[in-house]
Amino acid sequence: MTSRTQTTFAPPVMEARRWLGGVTFPDNQPLINVSQAAPVEPPPAPLRAAMAEALELPETHLYGPVLGLPALRAELAAQWSAHYHGSVTADQVAITSGCNQAFAATIAALCTEGDEVILPTPWYFNHKMWLDMSGVSAVALPTGSDLIPEASAARAHITPKTRAIALVTPNNPGGVEYPAETLRAFFALARETGLKLIVDETYRDFDSRPNPPHDLLSDAEWDDTLIQLYSFSKAYRLTGHRVGAVLAHPALLAEIEKFLDTVAICPSQLGQRAALWGLQNLGDWLAGERHEILDRRAAIQDHMPLIEAKGWRLMGCGAYFAYLEHPFAESSATLAPKLVQEAGILALPGTMFTPASDPSGARQFRVAFANVDRTGIEALFSRLASLDWPLATPVPAA
Image 1 (cartoon, one colour):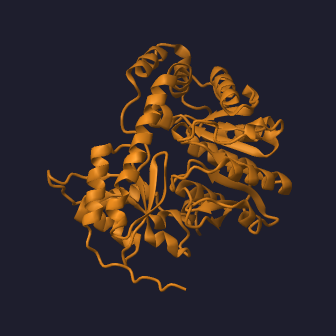
Image 2 (cartoon, rainbow, N blue to C red; image 1 turned 90 degrees about the vertical axis):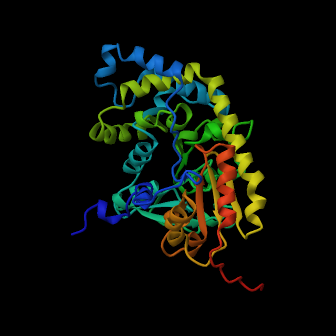
């Protein structure tokens, strides 16, 4: 017998951490960890002070509403309405224990065993893992060299078993920011075919564009098709408090409520109060965080010529991620542990983001740079440029 968990692979970040076992790093070459996209600093001091005050409230330590604190749902609805020039009401918002749970709850509400969900590749591995454990087939949608999926290509993958298309923008792992017209095309396709369009915008706060990245919420009936996911973890450094959100039709949220009540009963009361305080008070601080991330993105681009000369290629860069194509003969799955041992770099191979049948992952790496400053990025690229591993045989021109 195969259990639900045995249908999928081991957690990639945890697997990568095991490569550190028994490896020592000299003082002149400390570990550069670009494996995980999560802030390592605590929330800012004013937010921590607000959280300390919230700890004195009796209700912080009790069960709360399954779909989240009414004040947080209303605040998120108001801010999303303003930002996207649309209309979102509190009853279209649910708060979850992180964005991964938001995705899991959404799939549970939409799908049954044997159904299908279309995922562009390279995909976010936790989405694939949850589909595996749910008995739902992840249908790979290749994205090509620019990592931008095409709705016209997705159409060919739709079958009577398809229930949804799931997009992540800015993308994890690719870093690319999907153009507004791409999202509009997928929205139109989903509406035409009766599917749901799931858009995970965990990294929306670090989008480089000054204007809203899409206009989907301006559609008067957006919730008949669109399901938007969000995470407070990256914006306010609340990773350990697990607070996410789902924006969807109230009827779908009623189904999601069944899942949430069964799994966690309610999201963390302290985390929700922190998220609410952050939404109401940390706009300027978050703008500074965004500026720093954009500067690190620029540092990646500034240093690319150093490794482009060695055969590397930058496929995508944005939010917390750079996605690189390497020039070496061996698979990234083999090279990733060697990077730890020989260069002091912990990065995830592209094979963790692609189906086993897709050879492209063997040529790719994800670099999560949110916790690496400009000096660290310079060191990272210097180490990559110094690698002298055997190169892949060039493919002859057609």
